[in-house]
Length: 297
Image (cartoon, rainbow, N blue to C red):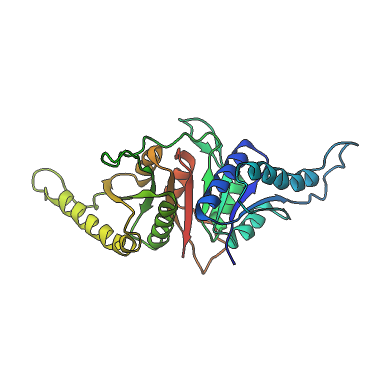
C-alpha cells in the first residue's frame, strides 16, 4: 500500500499553507494526498443557534473544501478527505502512522519572536512515529539558488540536515537524501560541537585541539555519509562542522533551505513520554523554512 502525504487541517491560514505544501510534496513524491481534520465531542457544549453551523459540521466540511481547492491546482493528484472524531493529537498521530509524512501549520509571530506552535502541534510532534513537517503561513522563499557553474541553470535550494552522530542520525540522513532526490536539490549537513570541558586555551594549553577535533569530526561525518552518497550519487553534498549552538546554525541555514530536517529520539520503554529535544524545539520555533522532525528509536 502506498503511503500518502497527510496534512492536518484546522481552518487557519497556517493550515492552508501546510495543505499547499503537502500537495506540492505529494506531487514531488508521486504519492496520494490525504487531508484530515479532527473533531472532539464536548459533552458540555451548548447547542448552536438556529441556522448556525456546529463545530462538527465545520470540521466535516473543511477537508472536502480544501480538497476541491487543491484539485484545481493539482488536477492529476489523488486526494482523499477525512474527518476524524477524537482528541486531535491522538487522531493526528494515528493518521501519521500510515503516512509517508504528516504536515501541520505553525503560526508566525514575526522575525524576532519566532513562531507559535500550539499544543496540538507540539503534542503531535512529540508522539508521532513518522516524520512531522511544520510549515509557517508566511514562509519566505528560499535564498538565492546556487549557480551550477555556467550551465545556464540554477540548482534548487538545498535540504539542510542537522545531525549529532547519535541514534537519530540515520533517520535524518535517510529523510534528507530522499527529500533532496525528489527536489533535484543538494544536501547540506550540519554537525555542531563545542570544546570538551578541561581544554585550556592560551599559554600551556594545546593550541591544536580545535583543528584536531574539527578534522576528527569531519572524518566521522563523511564516514556516515558514505553509504548515502553511494545510493544517491547525483546529489551534491556539503558538510559543515561548526563550533557553537546547533539550533542557531540550523536556524541561520534555514534562510537558504527548502527544508530543514532534525531528529527526535523516541524511547521504546516509555513510548508515551513526550520528547522533542531542545535543538528540535528551538529550530521548530525559529526556522524560516519548513522543519521536518524525524523520530528515531
